[in-house]
Length: 129
Image (cartoon, rainbow, N blue to C red; front, side, top):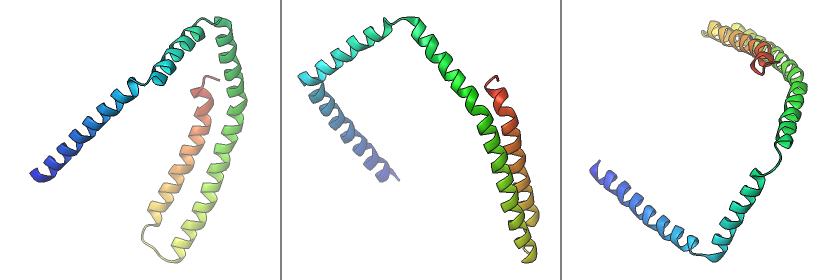
């Protein structure tokens, strides 16, 4: 146990030392410094944009989200139907084979269908639509 711990500690120590060496070599590279300087300049320029463009982008994304909600709701209902049909076939096969866990399978399938229907009902409420 102690030997495994010492091997892990020595491995972490050697990794830390090699990581510090790599960071020092990268940070002294003039290309790296130039890229970091350009990122700072671009960030400052991006903050100076008009706020109306941000408001328009958020409005556009909420409108797009409103269009997707009915489709996703119908998809949840379709998935619940598929789960119910496949589950019914599975339960039928288990009942014919006289397996012991039929009740468990029925409860899992019913629970999955209830969850999918409840999720489809709650999805518009979750997004405030």
